[in-house]
Amino acid sequence: MSSRPELQAPPEIFYDDVEARKYTSSSRIVGIQAELSERALELLALPDDDVPRLLLDIGCGSGLSGETISEHGHEWIGLDISKSMLDVALEREADGDLILGDMGQGLGIRPGVIDGAISISAVQWLCNADKSCHEPRLRLKAFFGSLYRCLGRGARAVFQLYPENNAQRELILSYAMRAGFAGGVVIDYPHSSKKRKEYLVLTCGPPSMSTTTPNAKGEDENICSDDDDDDDDGSEDEENQTVCISDRHRPRKKQRITKKGKTKSWVLQKKEKMRSKGNVVPPDSKYTARKRKARF
Image (cartoon, rainbow, N blue to C red):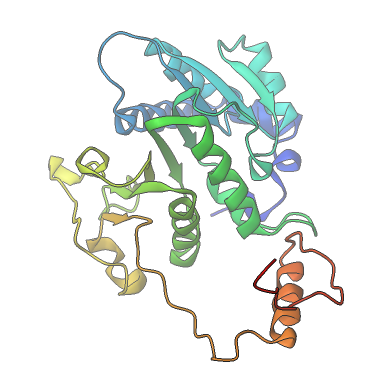
């Protein structure tokens, strides 16, 4: 079995001219892509009122998922980091508007204009540091934050993904919740090694009855979902847990603050830690950690 693509090279390098044309010319891949896109649109749960919606296809590649969107009568915008993939999409005369960009740097789309978003096999690429300046946590934060802003209130985003392990799955889900999304993970056919597919279904806004995670598909059309299960048992119980629901409304831990307050050494240490994570921190000065007067 070949290695995972995201472990071989960055996407803009892995999907070069040769790989892009090979990917798009494979009838097997085209069929799988169409099947996954159909399921993603089903989980998107758009209103059945024959009104075209504007959807965002993240990691659109050569426009295979966009074809499925167009068949359903919707307009779409495609974003991909591989120029070769977008060139193939232009040759195939894709109906959507195409954007060459890195989703890890934010989407750069006007707030509230997108009615829904899908992504097929792309989000897990954000968990890899392909460059020295890449920090997966910061890239996930930028991606989900910009996605939340561009979606309309109550709109959904559905991501079909292949997390490498449970820790990667939890990392992606946690940053989605921090951005303000509600939702969880839907696993179709959890007991099948071949048909098993994993979807992250998110809703823009706080949890409510309308944001309940959809049921998963199981073998023999059995519904495989469990809204009350926790993911504390690790990967051993993963087969029995097909739906994991989380939300951002959790009680925050109270910080322990001494009676004397935070000292200057504590503040300097905290600022240095933030700098190491790549955050913009004001420079140190003689006023650092100095307590302001009451009349300030």
